[in-house]
Length: 307
Ligand code: SPV
Ligand code: MG
Image (cartoon, rainbow, N blue to C red; front, side, top):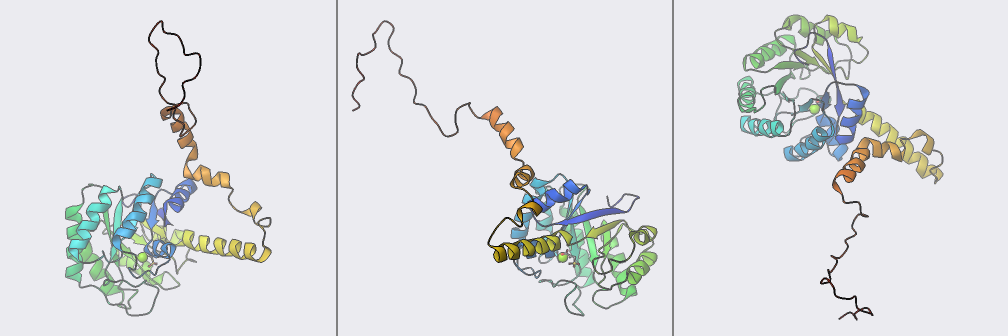
């Protein structure tokens, strides 16, 4: 998808269920958002969930869908050594790629505060190289995320960093922005001039028509957190309505049915597998083995008393 000549889109998911819903909607890829996975676990997007806890979530997501998953790897959970171990583990779990950003551990979400500290360029390049050298899947991708615009350093610094990360072997560059218009992102795209695939996250400049990204030569758009936010709105509405009304009657018609839940969970497959693999006895019932009588002997007239 990164190398495709068309503008591609990946959609946020934060657990197995949302990964299935993204696939069902017709998307070709998934963004495993750090913000969304953290929030769904009830913690902040500040590396409060450990990398192995994130890995566990990713394993469920990877099992739940056949779509490629690009993982938000934050700053790589440490130095080059943590990045290469993470890449190895992600490859083992069938994850398609990782995006790492040039900030410091523990990370802070890009939309919080001003002037977040950036990583040393050389050090960040070492993380990219270490990640590329340790991937066990030839198609695994490392997306290098440039935070210079978000941190107020401007276009030249953003381009300088992107160039260095590209030189270190990154498969794509993600240019992030927290402005409400796309001007600085489009200026970056002009300056970048297609040197490698370019990824953007238009969460804040959502009013920009998608065609402007296409014309600017952007490779991939990440819709970064909209399933999480939709879930928050829906769960709030239904919880407060049931709380208020002390009844389910008002919500039943506008929420997914229990049958839908079974369908999404894949219960039909389990029922078919049971036909193939379970003996045709009620589950859990075991019959004692029959005693065979010697040929010619007569059945006892009365039942033997149990000992
Ligand atoms: C995420 O989805 O966690 C991201 C994108 O990193 S953002 O929240 O915009 O930084
Ligand atoms: Mg993130």
